[in-house]
Every structure is written in C-alpha cells, then in structure tokens.
Amino acid sequence: MHLVIIGGGVIGITTAWACRLRGWDVTVIEANETLARGACYANGAQISVSHPHPWSSPQAPRIAMESLFNPDAPFHWKPKWDCAEARWLALFLRECLPERHRRNTRAIAALGTFSLSVLRRWRSELDLQYDAVTRGILHLFFDEKAWQHGQAHAAELAELGICAVPCTPDEAIAIEPALAPHRDRLYGALHAPDDESGDAHAFTLALAERCAAAGVTIRTHTAAIGWQFRADGRAVLLVRENATAAASETVLEADEYILCAGVGSRALARPLLGDVPIHPVKGYSLTLPIRDPERIPTVSLTDESHRIVASRLGNRWRIAGTAELAGMDDRPDPARLVSLYRWGRQWGGDAVDWSQAEEWAGLRPMTPSGVPLIGKTRYRNVWINSGHGSLGWTLACGSAEAIAGLIAGDPPSVAFPFLT
Ligand SMILES: Cc1cc2nc3c(=O)[nH]c(=O)nc-3n(C[C@H](O)[C@H](O)[C@H](O)COP(=O)(O)OP(=O)(O)OC[C@H]3O[C@@H](n4cnc5c(N)ncnc54)[C@H](O)[C@@H]3O)c2cc1C
Image 1: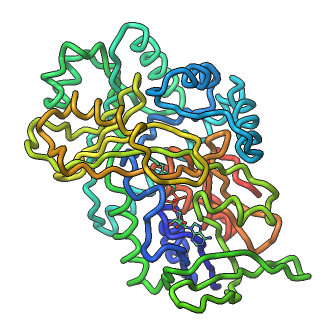
Image 2: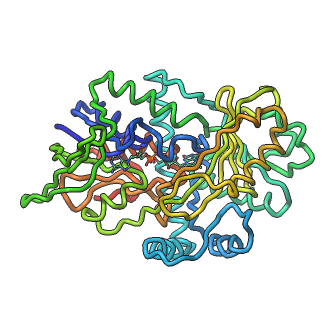
Image 3: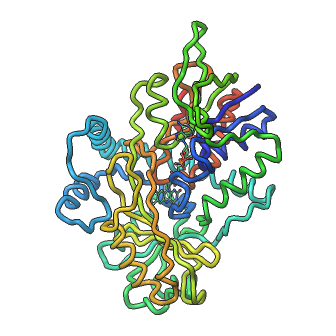
C-alpha cells in the first residue's frame, strides 16, 4: 500500500515512521525547502502529559477579557472582523463549558499518556539524539491562591492516572538546585516526574533520517494544493513542485493520504470534512546559548502564573509562551517578546548570552476544544492527524501510532474520540 503524508512537521514525520513500521510504502511531501520549520521548530520543548487541560476552560473567557486591557498578558487578541476567527472563538467559548472541558481534558490525558509510552519505545529502539531530559517538569507557584489551585490540579491529575507530586520550595530545589537563588520567590511546586523535555525540531530531523534510511520518500518543496474527487468515493491529491521555476500542478496518486499539515490543514480539509476549525494561535520563544550551566535549570519549568515554560536543550536554554490571534502571520512581534525577555532575565540573569538570543514565533494548529482531529474524513482514502494546538510535541508519537492503527483496522485502546 502506498501512503502520502502531507506535511513534514513533527506530526507528519512521526506518522511516516508509524506507517513505515507497518511495512507500507510511504511518501512525505513538505511545502518548505526543509522539514520541521513550522510550529515544532523552536517550541517550548516540553513533553507535558501533566498539562492535559485545554486552553478552552471555564476560566478562559475571563482571561481573554482581562487580556484586552493588558498589553503584557500571556494571551493577546484584538476583536476584528474575520469570519474564520469569529467562528473559531464562538466554538472555543462553547468548549469552555465545565462538562466539555472535563471531557476534553480526559481525552488529551489519555492520548498524552499513550504518546509518552510510544515516544519511550521509539527512543530506546532508535537511539535518537535530541537533547532529551527525562527528569520531569516542575510547575512553579508564587502565592497561596495559585498554590491551592496547583494542589487541586495535582488531585485532578491523580484521577487521570498522571503523577504530579506537591513540593515545598526546598523540595523543589532538591530536584532542581539551580532554583536555589529564587528560593524566596517560590511558594510551592508540583513535580511531574514522568514528563520530559527535548528539542522537537532535532527529534523530527533525526526521525526523518531514520524514515529515509528505512525507505520513506521525502519530497520537500512540494505543496499540496487541493484534491480531485473520483466517482468511487476516493480522492487524489494535487501538488505543486515549487522548486522548479515553471511550477506546475500535478496529480500525486496514492492508495491513502494523511493530512498532517498543521495550520495548513484547514484549507486542505475543507472539501473533506467541512470547515474544520483548526486556527493559527501564535506563540513565541527565545533560545539562548548558556554561559554558566550550573545556574540554568536542567529540569523543564512551567511558570503557572505567567504561562511561560523554560527547557534546557543541551547548552541552550529555550523560553516559550504567549498566545496571540494574528492570522497566518508568523513573524515575531517585538512587543510580544518583552515578557519572555523579562522572565528570562529574572531567572537566567547573565548565565545566558543575551546578545545571541534567537527570537522565534510559530503558529499552533489549534482546535477550539484543544483535542486534535485524528481519523477518517468523508473520503474513504483520506485521513487526518492534525490540530494538536499547544501539545503537538507531547501528543505526536501517540497520534502517529493511533492513525496508523486506524488505517490498519487495528486502533489502539485509548479512550480518545477518534474520527471513525
Ligand atoms: C511557542 C510554542 C510553544 C510550544 N510549546 C510546546 C511544548 O512545549 N510542548 C508541546 O507538546 N507542544 C508545544 N507547542 C505545540 C507544537 O509545537 C505544535 O502542536 C506542533 O508543532 C504541531 O505539529 P504539526 O506537525 O501539526 O505542525 P507543524 O510543526 O507546523 O508542521 C506542519 C508542516 O506542514 C507543512 N505544510 C503546511 N501546509 C502544507 C501543504 N499544503 N503542503 C505540504 N506541506 C504543508 C508545513 O510547512 C510544516 O512543515 C508549541 C508551539 C508553539 C508555537
């Protein structure tokens, strides 16, 4: 069987590997000249199974309203006349209802737990190098109110089978000694020992190399531009090879197609599933060379009050956060980077080289519920694995294994609403 995977990001390449493992003939097409330059390029690097709560929560409408009056807020949007965005926001609001939020959290937790097990298996089988750190994530809290919320969060996670251990500031420092100079700032922490961190971009490139060595064809500079539909209920893909000056549309025949195009999925999915609400939510990161390794945390951190994460990637430190509705514009806006610089200076000081900060912005492919779309479309040979939002790196390996299982008629037993 020949499969074409559309998109060479972390979701597309993990999907290619899962399909190749089943013995199928796989081609990946990627619009850019290189793989993994989309949302996975410089993301927060966390494998955060301990954060299964989608952004659409009962608190989200209040946070969104507050953000209108605070230019420094972690979430940034300006109401504007854009039908796609208005529709997405309306659906997002619906997903904030408590029962929907609980249901979505359960689905993400189940997929996240499964995904971590697949990631560990592949890592041990393939010896992939991507600056992985397997010492968990520390969620930091700075006042009594936030800490009470954190402890309630730990109890909820326990019900979902996810471990997060409440720690005093001294216990947190015992886990991550680089936090010692910040002792007075800390009120409490949750340590999720099973979580991990690592460079999603390096992982994707390393796995792509394994894919190529195992016979997967990878065609960069090849964009999917639409479909032709056949009377037998099947579809074929139209592509454009823009590496050549005289770019022309060609048909790329395959038995099955899997759409893994991140924020590019919405347009391609429209004729297959209707208007799937995968919307770009822009995020930012700074990556800094480390001067003094002893003073920069190795354990990945989540600052719960500023919604900023920080991960150690070998001799680099990655600080990431913010969410902005800015359409398909993925250029960094300096105003949105201010809070990351401020946070980094507070926690990293001169232990990193600020003169070489790499500024980056990327577009999270976000569904209103935070739950990715994995499974069948209305055309029987086209599948989708997309819309992983803020957790695509965490959910990638499990989503890949799941879609390959669904195509093979052998889905994994994960309590997740696959599209069937
Ligand atoms: C600032 C930030 C921080 C984040 N932090 C984390 C984190 O700590 N942990 C976590 O789990 N997740 C995190 N995420 C989310 C995660 O990075 C994304 O969910 C994930 O990258 C989505 O992967 P993807 O492969 O679907 O999309 P992408 O990585 O964007 O890849 C999609 C690919 O498809 C290609 N493509 C698009 N259209 C076409 C087309 N028509 N034809 C061919 N190719 C096409 C694109 O060029 C791209 O290469 C973060 C995201 C951001 C922006």
